[in-house]
Length: 323
Ligand SMILES: [Zn+2]
Ligand SMILES: [Zn+2]
View (cartoon, helix red, strand yellow):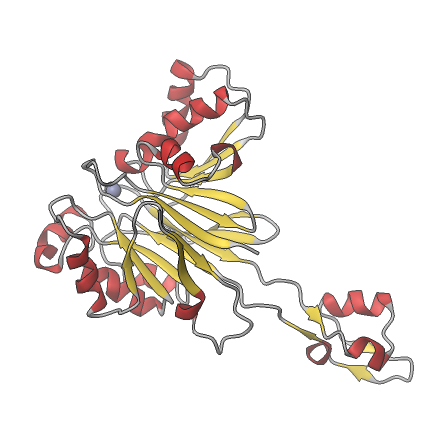
C-alpha cells in the first residue's frame, strides 16, 4: 500500500555540483514511475535505491533538456541490463521522433520495446491506468507545450465489517456481492444496505507534479485536494517579471497554487541557480502556505493512507528518508 515519492533531481536548467536536474521517482503499491528525466537520472536512481529495471513508465512534462537529457542514457542502460519488459514513455508531441532518432543512432537493437505515447498538453485527460492508479495530464503554461501529471490512487474495494458476517449469517456469495458494492437481501427478506455492511478502507491518495509553468489557476483547480503538490518555483517573487517572461513561477505563486488547490503539503523546486540558499524560497512560500518544503535530492515523502477525511492530508504526508 506504498505511496511515496523520492526526489532524484530538483534544479533548473543550469547544472550545479549540489543539485541534479528534474526527476522524481514515484512508488505506488511497489510499481515505479519516473516523472521527468534530467541528465544523470540513472545514477540518481541507483544512489537512492531504485532499480532502473523496476521503472514501468516515464512521464516527461516537456521537451526541455533539463527534463529529458537523462532518458537517452537510461534507455541504453536498460538495454545493457537485458530488460525485456516494454518501457512506456508519455511525453508531448515530437517525443516519438526524438526517441526514434536516438534509437536509430545508439540503440537499434534494444532487447525491449520502447512504447511512446504523445500526450495532448492542452487537455486534462486520463492517459494511464492500472489496477490501483490513474494518471491524468494537467495543461501547464510554459514556453513550449507542457503537461503536468496527477497521479491518483483508485478508490479501493470496500471492506466488509467482519462482525456483521455471523450477525446476518452471510454466505460467501453475499460477502463477495457486498464487497462489490451491492445491497444484500437476507433469507427473511430484510434488505441490508451496502453502507451498513461495508466501509471504505482508506481515502485514495494523490500526488501532483506541476513543472515547468507560470502560475495557472486552472492547473491548481485540476489538482484540487491533492495530498502532495510539487510545484516549480524558479524565482523569488521580487523577480516575478523574469518569471513571467520565461514561463516560470515564483515561490509565492507556487504557494498560492497550493492554497488554491487545497493541497495537503507543498514541495517547491526547479530553483534558479542564482539563489544560493533554498531557505529564502521556502520562507517566501511559507508566508502563504506554511506546509511547504524544498524538494531536495534523496528525500522521500510518504503519503500514509487515511481512514477517513477527519485526518488532515497534511498530517498523512511525511518525510521518511533523507540521506
Ligand atoms: Zn525546466
Ligand atoms: Zn522548461
